[in-house]
Image (cartoon, rainbow over all chains, first blue to last red; front, side, top):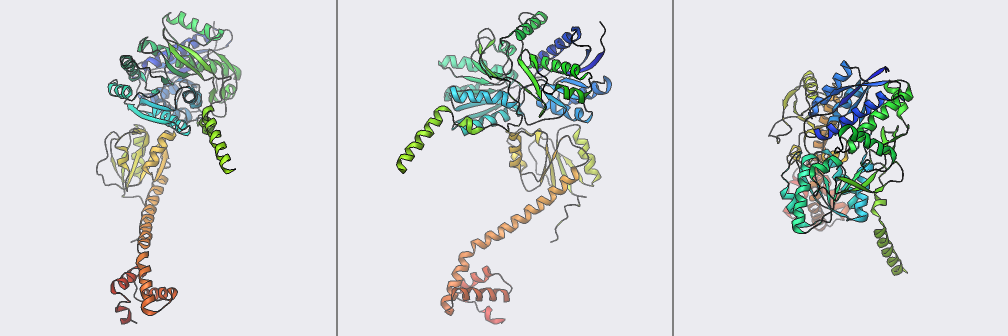
Length: 393
Length: 199
């Protein structure tokens, strides 16, 4: 089989603080490339060029510059953190290339040279806070890693919660990679907040979940925990007992029903072993490569402008369900979902949006008054108002 | 005192608080071209007592919750270098009251404008602060002026309007302010002697 080959840049860190997640993303990208190369549905193949920035922010720029100059790639799939993406944006904008970005992020960005395939804040944090207000509590204890993801998540949480009459009881921050969590666990056990919102990442999060689970068990407490980033491979790293019961918001869980996802999971496990697990970022990376391949096929060219136009509104029935690029902001229509982590390192999905949700990277359409007036609250307001009217009469 | 022109930047001292290895040389080169004196400071370190005329502060290099971030706030104008436009970061920036800003990635163009705007708005801030202080002084001395008017009304059997007119004319004749003359009237229990001396 000889199909014309298109160079494709893949930039994932194989070492450093988030090497585990980036490794999952790299595996998914290569799986998508192999499927496209072996498929008759595509009359071209991808020649993947891998680069490993080793988790060093400045290396992302070097890696992409090299891919563009030496390998002549028009399209790059990769980056995990916002810091790394911001290193790459200047060079893809200057040289008119496209970065296909798989990871969810905190929003407030919209480059013409990035296709944002991960969830925007209205698709991850907002549904989770809404669920918290409706079903758990309006008072929340926040703990997170001291960087932009947590800062911005905490801001959104605070804004929604306070407009609904609730309170942020505490905002505790740990440096990235920090695993000394006992002082915060002690504080939580002492104060017994109705819910903990966890935006820690990596080892900090695993250490915290283990320690809080142990301490809560000793104290006979059960404190609900929320997360916008927990995924299946992490449940295994945390351990089966401590990882159970975390309410998680994500566009993808391995347990999504439907033939497309079942087949996808089966192909993944055939490749990586029965004990391997998919993750939201891995699946999203697969979707990136597929969206790109389908746009190239539709455009009849890998030229960036043509591909961007072809990708716009071109629906792809992916493992996570229908996905398409919104040309207004280059982010994707995705279906938000909420799930609870279960024994056996899986998630049980208990809510999903009726349809894919339009991405809103700047949260311009966030209606705080609509979230603020929940059922019970609006009843209160109405009761007060009618009392008031009686007095006036 | 003549107002320094915001357009003349030669000889002024810039402090670079930056981390990005690709942007530091761009800023350094451009500041040298403009004839400015450059010093550099590691964003991870708390600010030292550095005498500079402008600070170029890379917002992304300092954690939002860092204790020493707010120490940068002071009378030296800050040019914020912005990479992240999330509201949490912008709120942090607003607390530092930057005099102007540049959006990353930096280029050689734009820096001069940012400097001019920073120097101009810093100068305006100084002038406004001085103006506000003057107005506040005036508000504080209103009680004294009122007491002086009452004194003159009683002593000279004048209406309030005429008493104030007399104080105003006298203060103008003696090249002093109404507030200062009023304080003298209150202290002397009437129009002080020197008012008649130079008539």
